Image 1 (tube, rainbow, N blue to C red):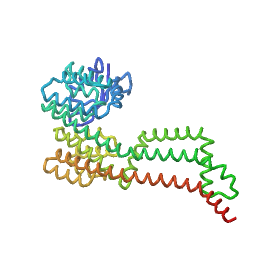
Image 2: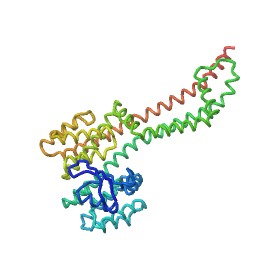
Image 3: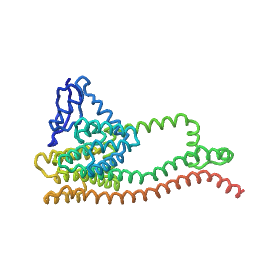
Image 4: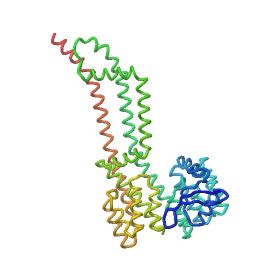
Length: 408
């Protein structure tokens, strides 16, 4: 049976082709013996469809939080440092697992180890779960005899990533709740409170203010055609979500977000910190520079930064420095590029990049909290103005009626 594959060499160069094997596992084994890092493999008969292992791995990845993978790396590092065999260590972690999906992943991992695969090769079979950086650092740890150290580094990397996500989600939670509350309050006032004044307004023999007319029209529209407005709004929201998930929508949002006054710089700083942390960790772990850039690129989701790292990889291939390649666009913080330039000259790129990532993450955490603290009062002010506008619009006709009655 023939299999087509896409892989990377140890030097980080992409490679694709076909290979003869009895089944997929044998094909993967042959490619690993050639020191190739497999990214995709499929049988010729199935066309360009990804292998079953890749598809199932993708499903598993979507259900496995970063925190679980981080805790796995941390606990496995401790067990390995005490001299526990890998098979026994993973078996003990299976018993502690409370998730059926995660238990299945560990069972498959242990089965690969029992068949004679290395830890990195076993993880590579489920690379959508563990990721290219995890697999590469595990391979470096096995080669250098310091697997426990590498696993601990992976754990710190994933914990930091989970912390950043939690900070962003926590900072946006309260503003989102306030926004939802504003929508609910507006709906109640338009559909419940305002209609109670409709009869009173009709009895007033005087023209209504323009704001009151507008609110009455909006209230009638919502109450009369709610059966069409709600499904239409749901369809529009679904369309927006699908568009945002597409490559065009994602590229538009990423470009637009980077152009925002304050938020753009914060996004740039967050992406710089993440890239420097992964790249610095790989370089410090003695992974070749080209392979480090390639693995970092594959771990980044932002298309602009993926393109930047692709340019950096091409530049380094022809002999240019990493700092010069990163400075070609305004996507990397300038001060960080200058620090990397000096680190290249001193041969301390790995530690300097990790230190820069720590510094930027601390700054970003402060900025995110500041932005959140500014957004909250702005939303409260907007909610107050909205309620005040509706209240004044409802009571203005009553004030006119009172004034006219006093004059008579």
